[in-house]
Structures are given as structure tokens and as C-alpha cells.
Length: 123
Image (tube, rainbow, N blue to C red; front, side, top):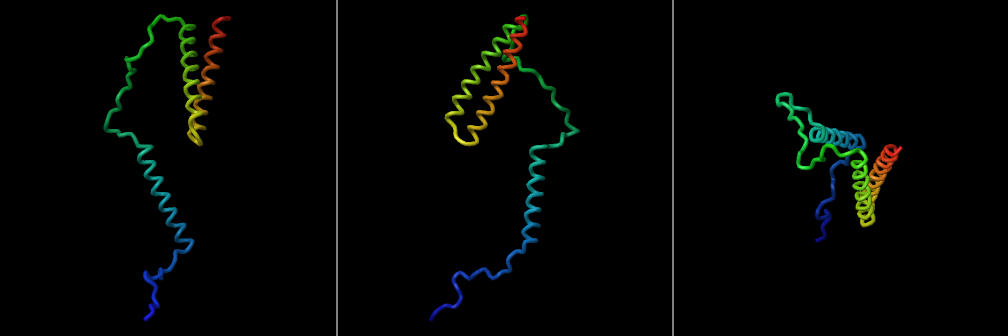
């Protein structure tokens, strides 16, 4: 004997209307927004005092070093970082490559600023 009812049966429930789908999406979006606000933008706890930020003393720059030397060191550090990020960018693809190239551009801008500061010191 042949079966008339498919196995498993077709979905016989009423499909969602566009309005119901929109309402569900808005509820989901509101829930996501609340979760993001909770975890990424927490309100400061007023009962707990904020800890003071202390500068780390693991790495320090000796006092008394002239500005030209400090700027020259900063320039060399930025130039090294520029090369490292450039090499890294060319081993990546897609959005990660674009991010690395953006970081490389920011480092280049820092180099230009330090270079101009060195030029200003010489005059």
C-alpha cells in the first residue's frame, strides 16, 4: 500500500509573516546591543575605589639624555617597526593585510614627525 503522507511530514505550520520576522530581528538586535553594552561598556562600580595607575619601572629611560639622542632613538625604533610590519603585511592576505598596512602607515607618520623634530633641533 502506498503512503499518502510523506515521511517525515511537510511543515504544516503557518509560516511567519514579514511583520513577525521583523519583530524577531528587532528583539535579537536589542539583545545583542544590551550584551555588547554590558561587556564592552561597563558602568564603573561606585562602591569600589579605582586603582591608581602606576608607571612600570621595568623599562626606564635614563634622566639627563639630550632631546636629540632621544628623538634619534625613537626614529630608529619606528624605522625598525616599519620594516617589521611591512614584512608581516606582505605575508598576509585580505583584511589582516590591510590592517597591517594601516599600522605601517601610522608608523611612517610617526617617523615623519620625529624626523621633523630632529630637523627643528638642528636649526
